[in-house]
Structures are given as C-alpha cells and as structure tokens.
Amino acid sequence: MSYLLNLHALAALLGIVIVLMLTRRWPLNKRILVLVFNLLFLYLFSRKLFLFSAVYVLVNYLGYLWLCHAPKGRRLLFGAAIVINVATVAGLRLFGMNVIEHPLFDAIYLFGLIYTVLKVIDAYYFAYYVGKDVKAPLLDFVNYLLFIPTFTSGPILKFRDFLADSKKPYTVSAADFEAGIKRVILGLFKKVVLVAGMTAVFHNVLDHELRIYDSLFLMIWFYALIYFDFSGYSDIAIGFGRLMGYMIPENFKQPFLSPTLTQYWRNWHATLGDWFRDHIFMIFSRRFSSRWAAAGLSIIIMVCIGLWHGFTWLYVLWGVYHGVLMALESLLQLSLVNRKKVSRTYFYARCALTQLLVTAAVIVYSGNSDVVLRIYRGLVNW
Image 1 (spheres, rainbow, N blue to C red):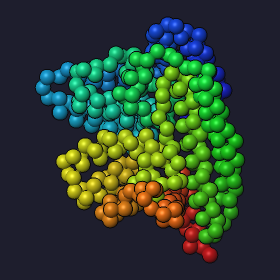
Image 2: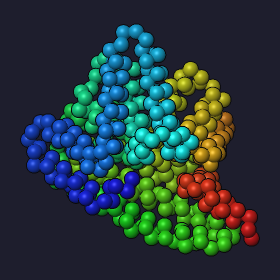
Image 3: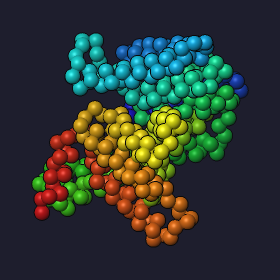
C-alpha cells in the first residue's frame, strides 16, 4: 500500500536496517528488534489498527498453540479456526461496504487484514499437518503476521520459511545491502515515476468519449499500469525485507512469457497463486484426482481469488471467466507448455494468446464498476 511511499515510513525502514547492521553481533537482534519495530510502526500509524492487530494476533496464536497440542478434535478445531478467520474478513468487508453497520467499526481494521488472514491460515495448516513439533515462539508469530514490508500487499510469506529465516543470524553483507537498496530504488521509480505518469494518461483518455480504439488502449495501458504499480510495491517489500534479514519470495516471474493461464497464475502475483494452490487445490486434488475435478477446482479457486480482491459481482464474473478458461485448459490438456519442447513460434503464439485473454478482463482490477462498464461499452462504439 501507499504507506511505503511515505517519507517517514521510508526513513523508519532505513533506520531499522541501520540499527540491525550495527547490532549484528547480538544473536537475537533480528527477532527482537524487528518485533519492536513492527509494533511501534503500527502504533504510530494508527492506534486503532495497533489494538485490533494485537488482539487478532494473540487470539490466533492461542488457537495455533491449541492446534499444535490438542490430543483430540484437531480436525474440528482446524476447520473452525479457518472458518472464523474467513468470516472475520468477510464480516469486516461487509462493514466496509456499509452492508452491515456498527459504531465500533473503523475501515482501518481492514488495513493489512486481507493479507494477514492468508498468513494466519498458512500457520494453522502448518500446525495441523506437522503438529506440536512446529510450535513457534510468540515473537516469531507476531513478526510473521505483522512484518511491515509485506503487511498490506505481500508478497505472501510462508510460515515455515519465515521461521527458518528467524532462526538465522543477521548476516546482510555489503553486496546484499547494495542489491536491497537497488531493489527499493527500482520499486520507488515504478511507483512514483511510472505509475503516477501512466495514471494521469489513463484518466485523461477516460475523460473523453470512448471509441473502440480508446477502450483497447485503456485496457492495455491499465494492464501495464497495474503491473508497474504492484511489481513496484513488491520490489520495495522484497528490498527492505532482505535488508532486514528475511528472504521475501518473488511475486512476478516474467508473467508476460506465460504460454497458458495456468502458468500465468504461477508467475503473476505468484505468492497468491501458490497460496491458493497449496491450501485448496493440493488438498482437495488428493481426494478427487480426475481431470474434471481439477477443472472444477480451478473455477472455485479463481472465484475465491476474485472475492478475495473484492465483494462485487464484477470480481465474481472475473473469477468465473478465468476459472472457466483454466478449466478448459485442464480438460483439453493444455495447461502446461514446455518451452524446450515446442517451436519458438508456437511458444510465443501461446504467450500472446494468454496475454490477450488476460487483457480482456484486466480492467476489472480498477474496482470501479462504472469505469469498467464504460470501457467495455466503448468496444462496441465504432
């Protein structure tokens, strides 16, 4: 989110990096100082968010410990924990949409929760499938959920990977520091320079009567805009994460060279695709291994991703659109293309087709139904 573009936030992040480098001889510097930084940052940013996050994390930590040690009823506890967390996010989303109203609700509660709940569920999965041997200290659990560089927009960290990083001493070399700073600068350039300029162009074209060529331009332009926007944030998060001693996974892995939609969702917002594949597809595909089951799961997962982005009919249709296309790929055995086993012409033709299919629905990411419908109407205005 935009708070990483705030000069005070950037200064704070650089400050904790410097403190970590100066205290590298203290074995616990990374775990304790990062904990203090995460909590202090949230407290100064919003006391309401700090209080909500503290309660949310502590409640889930108790559930996590219970699941690790529960001798009986682990399946019921596991399912209940996931349902309660999903219901919490859904309920707050409905409050944010004014479908439900209550004087205690504040929109700031949703800040970061959309990503935090995915990490919470990953921790529960880890506890359920591995058991009591994976019990994590409270400070590592808090750091995992509230890690500031990835708090609001990812990339989505895996619990087991974060715990492994926490156990390692702070060893950021001069080369690591240089690479991290360059990554942050690249992200800032994308967000501050490219996205700002591209957004102005987008709205300038949008303000005029739209014909087919205007709408096509806006769809392609917006696709590039959100790529630079989101990948720019990921660059900043990855850069600062690594400067703080944690390996943050890549979120964009050459998505424009994806020959199928299935492969595209492993490369575009890769950590989100990985999360849904690990926590939904892999679990249910073990029980239902047919091609039709895989196709059905593709539709369910993409609708879930759509609803995760927003509770609107546009996102539901977006999910159905992507899910049906991926289901067809599965049924027709077109989900994977090995670049080394096909001709260059075929490979790039499939990449172009994938990008065309993505571009056709990408404008939904704007989150504004009026803008989306206006651009689609322009496609039939010659």
